[in-house]
Image (cartoon, rainbow, N blue to C red; front, side, top):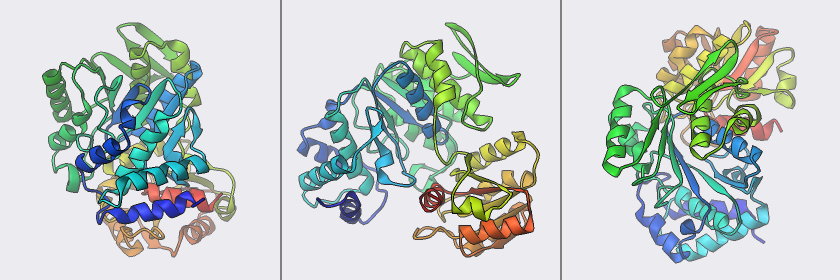
Length: 422
């Protein structure tokens, strides 16, 4: 059988653009496949700029603690494509993935379609053939014209915090971007709304009102915050005093609140809320690396990994570092040329002592290390360059024994690190 990697490489060539937001090609292919999206378990559809993956991981942990079988779809993957498609709790098997991709490739008949569209169709096909109680569906980009937005009546919609990102596709302003994210709201379907800036919230409220979609809004209908090292959550049903989220960072308290609000809307209670915050796993979000060649290169330094890549992500990383035990922190950073690099780095200048810039290997949109270092210097971070992550980590460890080293700036870089570090 042809490997999934070989098939995925063929699928990459079906459209000249990586991103071309439209639902026409998706709807054509799904019709050719006899509409698998209509036969998948009840959908919880998640959009937003930051926190989608963490929130989804917490919802899944809560549902699975209740004994539910859960499909999950996320993107991008880190180490291998199979991470994107989780069938009833387990990553899709290689044989199933390859067969499903080939089936979608045949049904598409060589017509133009983006990689994300055809692989999303493959996920729907796989989900339609395995029994489960829920399907967690993470939007790829935006919402209104995202390939996942072909579900006519999800069980629940979730919108995590919205900020400025992907302006070349979604619009220049927060209201424009919020309008795209709010495109997942469906008539009469409840929406859990994470913390939002006022302009984004206004757009979401208007869209929900037009469609008669009930809203459960952070800081209005529910709230979650840290108190004495615990997570306090409350809504109209009462107050929960919970352990802190196992996913590190102050921002995870709000993501946990969004996840718990979703679980409670689905009818679950305190045991599922506890599981959501204590059992969730989500790699490359302030993940401590404890083994592998990079850890050896780091010597006595702490080594961490994070895939945040926009200004809100930079703020979350900075807040997480500020809340950790005091230790000099040095960054190893690679970024894409499509990102607001200066906006990402500015918050980090207050919590890190230096930055070593690298290019992201085999990534056509990588920012050259010299340019990344230039942005760091603009942000007030002393910066140098290195030929690769291994050299950057070893050089930082030699210059700053016992420091904290954070590899950051891109999920693509994080995925490369996880693959190569084992």
